[in-house]
Amino acid sequence: ETGVTQSPTHLIKTRGQQVTLRCSSQSGHNTVSWYQQALGQGPQFIFQYYREEENGRGNFPPRFSGLQFPNYSSELNVNALELDDSALYLCASSRGQGLSTGELFFGEGSRLTVL
Amino acid sequence: DAKTTQPNSMESNEEEPVHLPCNHSTISGTDYIHWYRQLPSQGPEYVIHGLTSNVNNRMASLAIAEDRKSSTLILHRATLRDAAVYYCILRDLSSGSARQLTFGSGTQLTVLP
Image (cartoon, rainbow over the protein chains, first blue to last red):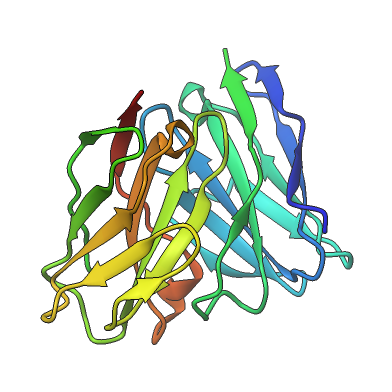
């Protein structure tokens, strides 16, 4: 069983640029969530995708957007990068719409540095 | 949303039991108690969850107070590999907020050889 994989693992961007991060969910999982983790803090929920539609969103501005594809993989897009966007971006997959006690499986994250 | 309170850090000796506390005095009847941990340079990893009764699995045990206002994650024999940040999280499955895990700062567990 393949776990959650994310790419790239590390990247550096400059302020104002745009970035796309990718996530392949675990086999059999149809729900993908994205989290942002700043240094020294716990992860913060960005949004969740189920059946290719966003079905939950945290307190993040519209310049954070996403996609989910028919194979359940997902992308996180961030436009107009700001210095505070520097963080570890985590993808998590699960079964169902996330309204059960089912566990989330996290990838190892994409470390974004904005200069 | 109900919040959790955990100590910032704890230390344990290798091969000894570890009891990680979590306070959640405003817990509601529909809140499940989840624990995740995050090893260095990795994403969070599910450990255990429960509602009212104590729970055991291959990784740990979860002891829930009778009034549910606190809980304790128990690692029966700590190993160096258990050094991680441990997060206690409440999930209210009666609302859409269950879709997200609300992480606090967690407890940094250091295991001493």
